[in-house]
Length: 305
Image 1 (spheres, rainbow, N blue to C red):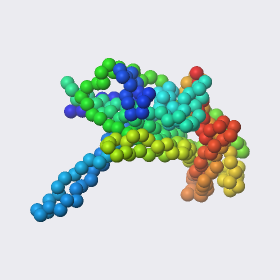
Image 2 (cartoon, helix red, strand yellow):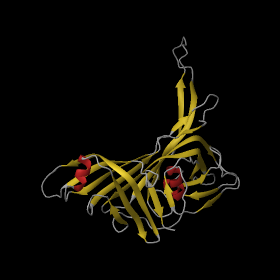
Image 3 (cartoon, helix red, strand yellow):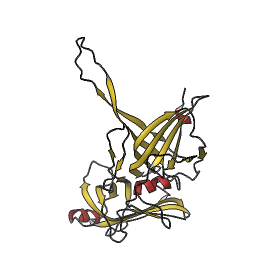
Image 4 (tube, helix red, strand yellow):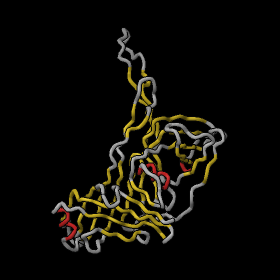
């Protein structure tokens, strides 16, 4: 009987969409939970029978999707981030781009003498969420959309597995720094959430249960923040529909950190209410990241070498 605590999730970039490289070198992923699963679409036959029974149920499409939940650590997800950003690290800088990247993801379930393998091919990163709050670890999740799925009882011929790194988990206290919003003096936050979505959709085709590919949508950057209400600056940006920017750094040491830059944001909403006695007054804001000409991107991440 399989045990969830012994589950392995490994990943490898594909050279050809939907095809696992020969003798693959998988990299084991750090994660806290996962929801990757096959999606089998079926249609019930509408044939009329004199005995009133259902004649058949037919498979008409097959795909896969799901998420990988994680605690952020340096260097653990840099390859997946390339898939999310449709881009490649260049001089340790990653910007959202237009180059689609796909992966093969393999889940291994330990069941004794014969292990079980679930494989997702043509897997692309549809979205990522990143959650930062006081007194908490920085957590997040990647959501994947895959064109194909298969199950097996042995490794792919010649496959090898590289262990995940052991870098420290990043927290939102000592590991959070350099927050800056132009036009706001020393903003003090209690929470910050960031979502990047690629709006992917499957390309179904006649003659195959699996999709032929994945259509790429717009890269949308959105988020929420909760800020101590110390002056009118940030609320004034919302009222005036003024654009600003957002920068923050995550990492436990000078040699292992990420600097996130959203070069242009506008606030969609802002709420300032006194919810009750004996608590600080907070501003809750939702924002959208827009294309920033200075960085030629909607979001940029810089990692230390």
